[in-house]
Image: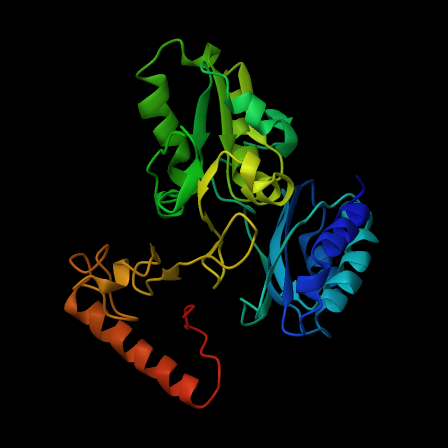
Amino acid sequence: MSPKSNYLNFLKLNEKKLNTPSVKVITAFYKFFEVSDTFALQNSLKSIFNKTEIKGTILIAKEGINGTIAGTTNEISVALEKLWCLDVLIDLQPKYSFAYKNPFFRMKIKLKKEIVTIGLPEISPKKIVGDYVKPENWNDLISDKNLLLIDTRNNYEVSIGSFQNALNPNINNFREFPDWVDKNLMNKDPKIKNKKIAMFCTGGIRCEKSTSYLKSIGFKEVYHLEGGILKYLEKIPKKESRWNGSCFVFDYRVSVDHNLELGHYEMCFACRMPISQNDKMHNYFVRGESCHHCFKSSNDKQKKRFKERQKQIELSRKKNQSHIGQVKT
């Protein structure tokens, strides 16, 4: 399906929800390609977004582009048409969801060394990458009992949802993934490179780079979920799903459920861990200051700073203004 057809199909399937005036379309995308002039691409994107009310973050590096943006249906439709008119982005395949208010506070288009940081500049999905598996075929693949299924996301993301039987590396950031592979796969199983491996992440970018890494060090049979969890939730009916829980997203929605609607988690300002309604009943939970995950690890100076930040958020809320540090409530 062409990028535009996929977008029109999303609009058709969610027509009633998107007709609500306050609804914003959340559009996540990435593409690995050789960017010859990062400044020129940055300027091209600024010319598309500068005069709109669209908000979000787009990262540009020599290896490609990675972004998530949000706006009204009309704004996103116009922006996508302009993105697809750029030769390097003509085949860009975004993932879509929605929210009842914009989860971002501003629009940022930033230049980076990597669009997803693994810390190994020689690793590139343009050179070598695992086999892409479409969401419609994912359930069959992960039903294989001989398969090792790996969740490449951070531990706090995995804590609120993952696929059945997926292995959690317990990493704090993607940069730790190569070390985890070395210590927990390579050193523990000399035959691991011949094992069938499948990996997944939120939108596809981390698992695409992680399969590139595994292939570069000699793993033979490596697969990854094309479009990531978000595309799987978009394409696979809930009754057929192998997904359990919520999907963490990197904006102030914190999480989405299987219908790609707002989940039931907030975020602890201090440690950025997702917290549920039950977590907020814990003695260590103080809004904006701490939760049971971080209460003992933050010092008095940090707690004082968090407390002052929360005070400013509350003052902004009373004035009906958005504070840049505000988390979802």
